Image (cartoon, rainbow, N blue to C red; front, side):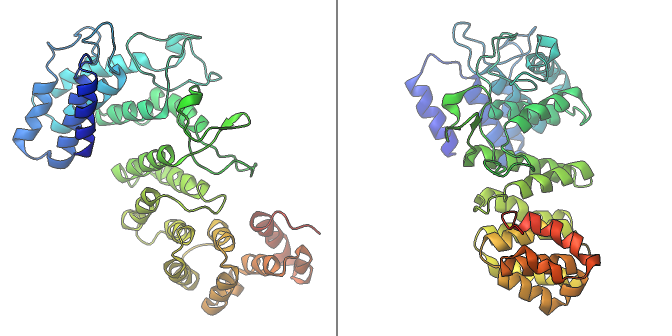
Length: 375
């Protein structure tokens, strides 16, 4: 409801603006919290009357021809709300709206190619943008359009999603081969320097919390919608691991999202390792230790180097070694154990005493845990 209060205050400051964004967000909020109530659900049809906006274009937010009111935002939110309500004729109602959103994407249809910074994204909307005129483009508008397409039943293999992935990955500071600046977080826009709140570092924008939290939430919502979709699950776990590359605390949203994973994937060792890592990152080593001890004793899967890297970065290297010994995993996960001992000794030469059949793998693990160690 705080969102609606903010919208009302903004409307009082700018009375000339169209009400379509306000109505779309209000309907989405109501439907999210009480969509089973028939009276609330009827708001969707009353709010988005086909006579109220452009029938031919299928978009909202252009009632004032001089001041477009975020047409892509308004149209995407309206589609999500109408799909949630599912009143009579809803599919016919959203068809032109989906067509409009498709035409707005920065892809080949509008003269853009994968090398362009905005490729796969959505901007503010209204007129179609062609090179080099990008207008305002950001991750938030793109996210809401993706929500709308998914709600409308657009399949995962649709080219629109493949194109969007290129833009989304451009907004993430993650490169497994580069440590500085590769913190796994997200920034807001590839083109709008002033809207990236954390500023710029060299030729890249810095990551910051709100955008990263939105991206993480989107990843995990996608998995919750279809828990059996293996690619979505692996991508969500990959993204979660990327957030811990510098040993920093993760947001409460991120921890809450990862905490839901064991319910979706019971007895899944990868999920348990990631959750243990997130708990350690947020200072809850006791719970992280218990999960790691259970994993080490259960023999349900191979070791996860990322989680033990987090233990090292958060000052729990000795504890991690001790729990492996206590669970008997110092033998089963011998290369990992020896790599941790080498890190504890602060010496790569420690591994020379390790049996050759374990040494090569231990050296590879040590290069991940402590790349700064040299011969």
